[in-house]
Image (tube, rainbow, N blue to C red; front, side):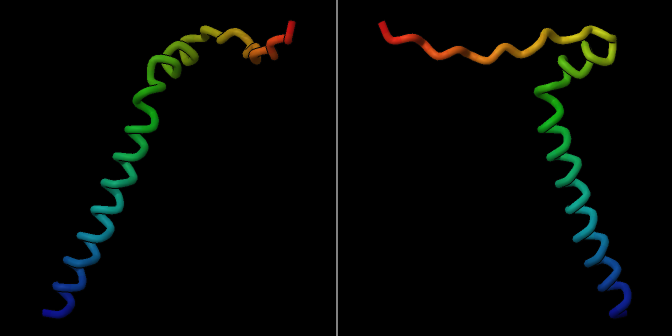
Length: 57
């Protein structure tokens, strides 16, 4: 009896942790999916050019 309760608790804890991890991965990758797709097709992104400081006149 106690074994069944512990197994159920373990499945609940690890199942919800896994679902949370998958959700976090999806929400962090989804906004970048278009960029990832373009890079996978071999389209190289241009180099990053940092903003320059505005000169005081």
